Amino acid sequence: MTGPGHKAAVVAFPGRPPSQIGFDRRELNRILDLYGRMVAAGQWRDYAMDFEREVAAFSAFRRTSERPEIRIEKRPALHTRQGMWALFGEAGQVLKRGHELPGILAPLERRLLKIVEE
Image (cartoon, rainbow, N blue to C red; front, side, top):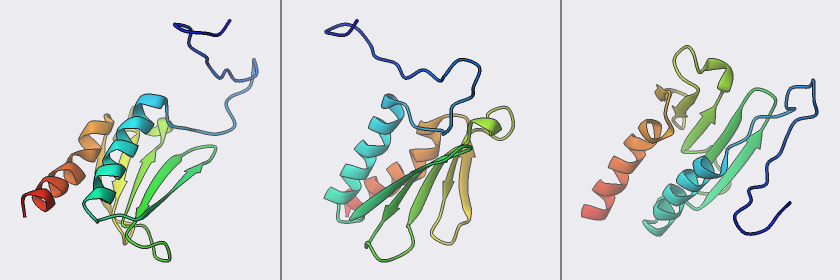
């Protein structure tokens, strides 16, 4: 049943793991909110999302034809180790790892505040 007050859910076929990892609505809203503010500040111009069997990734670009400035990855298989979230820099270096998305986005939020204050 669908309509106001009812949530729709995507369910994997019984007995089979999902074929790809994705972002839930709350996660995607948080990432796209930051992306929109970075676009408004003139820092980013384009983005890409990749969904694979083991990882979902969001990449943000200063210009379309270059490597991403940042990449946010969600790897649920690592949730019991260093955390399923990771923030990577332009050269592929790990900038931050953690269990919660807000903690991973914190360095970008701080950078945005510095840009706005200037």
